[in-house]
Image 1: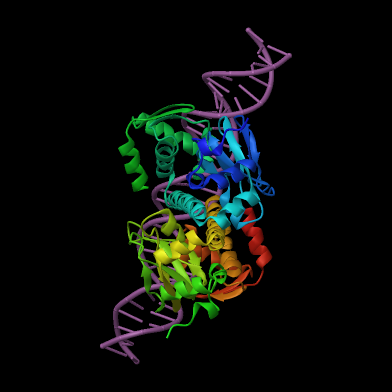
Image 2: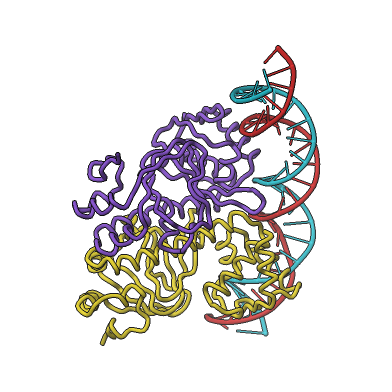
Length: 226
Length: 226
DNA sequence: GACTGTGTGTGATATTTGTCACTTCATATA
DNA sequence: TATATGAAGTGACAAATATCACACACAGTC
């Protein structure tokens, strides 16, 4: 028994714009699914068969490296479509996605989705806005990572988790130190050292996966000074 | 005397889709302009007043750093809109743009452009495709830059110029060594050293602004091995 | 309880790369 | 022609960071 898109409280901004007949069309061409923690949602290089919309839960977007070394791109929050740039800008998925926690998702038929865009400019506009915001965010993150060195990068990562992802200065993150390093392009050891330095200085408190930011302004300062 | 959009051979893929009345609307709400080499088109932080479409010429997209040190993001080719992600994802321009050579551009009224998107889903779809392709390209460049060290980065930059920008193994580039370094996140000196090493090894030939790639496969190899 | 695998912390060391100082070169200008 | 000026090349050195090696903690399994 599938919940109706019309009354779904997890639906996207774009879907909120659709009229009744469009909503019905969408409902007839989508289905629900779920993932357990650590399950792979789809792999880079795979043909795009359906659009995956994350209703609840966090997703890891990453790129599998040659030597088994993954590069982590970002954490995708709930109420997001996975891999829209790949859908419109390419024929295959460019990235891989893994559930960071239990997820509920919707699978949407590609052609239905594309037709909604082509026939409803307002829907298209909302999708465009979401893609553009995502693009700006990613760019800013990448540019920051590129310009800074270890302490600035780690400070950035912590602020990113606290402000963008969890919207809270206390959070629990199911990423290893190695993963955090892969997100900001530094080694596991450097990540450890930076986090411990911040802890020693009383800026954060952390035990493995739990993080508490005690002095956000200090992190901000470190982030800005590089 | 403005050339008609209907017969403009520099028009974008998206504009090719418009019907006669839409083309007329566009024409009535756009004007032509030009820039000389090194002129600034607009600055980051400025309010978006018009959309700038580059008909001919190359544009440098960059970010002004705190200490007068610019970060170069990418080179924008002709037949591109400047800063679409900023237009749809924010209220102000996120990046600065400078003419790398003489340019001809069109200024398009924002509301006219947005209305075309909202009333013509096919137009919206084409804009979406272009934004997504751009986003994928940028991501790949950023991820490569992040993962590799000097020689890999420089090899990447050379392949980027040859394949993406000039579509030719011989090209003339009005960027200083310092600029090239800023594009891939390394210093001027390291850029010089890498280019000279490639030259000594017979992989490229370069004299200041002229570049000739003699062994593309070798660059590819260096790029892949990091 | 012993064993195993995985994640984490830490010091020593090697590598990479940025920075500094200086030279050379090309171009423009008086 | 002389002379600034900015870009480019180069060697020496310092700083940042990865790598290596090892120890430890913890959870699951036999």
